[in-house]
Length: 337
Ligand code: TXA
Ligand code: MG
Image (cartoon, rainbow, N blue to C red; front, side):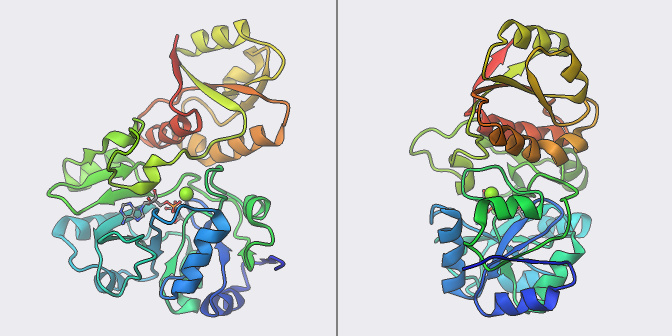
């Protein structure tokens, strides 16, 4: 199959492909998604095949109108509605008990469903053109950094999917925040485009799942299957260096040798004696989120890079979302300096 690159005007065509059971890479404000008709079991299975995704890792169902939520969930608790009012359309995914309208393959056999109403207008128009909710994981090969441009999707999935719509670069750059409403209190399963601080301001106390900042033990029961897989890993080895900017620069420079690179802030670049790939200004967590996955891909593109020392983002506001991804890219290897 040859993957077609569609422009933002070709929404009708994307809808036709999706209604026919095809796979289309679609822009959202977080990252690009690999969409299929969520009511078509065969189409949903082909998402798992194209990505090489483990079949026990459930998909997010994307809708275009708030009202569609009630049909997908058996019940929507009061706090979940508050979250919908505050953060939809946007980078928040709700985990709720699923109704029998949700395909078992989408939910990977779980009793729950993940639902999101994206903020990107083009994404909503594609859902409407299809006339069905769309199942869509990030449009990368499983384990590689999530795609934030149409070009990234092509790099990973060329000729494995029917089409990609080019909607430009994603404005958020990390995936949606995943919050479970299955328990008594909301529980953060994956930090993302909506921050923990914003959630707590609206919903009161939110529990943070241990796996947001820690590694799953082998065989451990996890609330969100995606958190147990090694994710976002570039081909080079990554080690996080935690400490002040000055200590970071000193550490990297004293370990400078062939094959070593730095993943750092803009202001560090000129001070470093190794190749430096930066992902934003130290003070701008949102910029760091927007540029982070692209920076990991840039590292991959330079094949002679064997070891990367990464500057550790501050784990607050959007920095928590970046740190969560960086930990996985580094296989949880952190050196304190
Ligand atoms: O921003 C995003 O969320 C993007 C765009 C395309 O919407 N999508 C995305 O999907 O990141 P994916 O499949 O790469 O990540 C979805 C995460 C996975 O970690 C998965 O395990 C978790 O959500 N998830 C999905 N359904 C779940 C459920 N029923 N219970 C717990 N976790 C669930
Ligand atoms: Mg993903």
